[in-house]
Length: 337
Image (cartoon, rainbow, N blue to C red; front, side, top):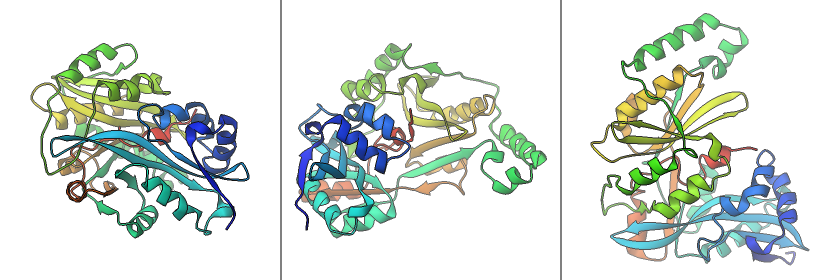
């Protein structure tokens, strides 16, 4: 095997990272090059993404996000596995396993959302998985998503489906979004008094003020982040255009009073219908959302975990308490400059 070197990402020149990202993340390479310090939360802890090089050329990366979890009432450091890549010409030569083994030495508690291919690799290293987290989708402009309707220009089908969708979500009450950047104090103040559900069966991501500031105010696409409010229930959303599809991703919801999440979601979808949004998307474990979104299009997400500590490992196997679209890179990986 060729001689290789593994470094923390902060030890690598941005120019080298840019060359690697061009080859591995074609659409995102400019975004990653400009914002990798935010993306991988550099400086939050000693845990950093790893870079694998041969002859000063980057051939692989194991990305991570350092986070804190509440497990059995204790604050536990953990890392969230993201952006794993090996250059095509070096795949199948054992470098992926080398990088994974080194990555697993960084922190004793590790989690990720992953595809089936990655899950098969993780299971070889003793990871466990849980399928309770779901991605919910509500297509609004069907013309964009049903090829035969688009190809045959069946506009009457699109109009009929849109009418039925609008009728389902019609309400006498309406709400409008506010930009996060201009109104962050409202979010910050309400965030401090949000209702918190406790359940020791699950690990909980610690979303404190430091986390909130990193995820929203320091975010490179802050201009596209908004929030809705209805009866002291809040929804932080990402509204953006990608490949000619206008999306509204519901990133995070919380309340400071009686929870009315279902009604909030319906009002958001109603706003989306009236404002030319093509697709509304959310991540949650609440199966009731299948009645709000499309049940047929809801899809389980692999949540995988590993820990050196047996009790923590058993807790992580149950999944996360209240996972949402703001967690990991489910939403942020869609952002393109």
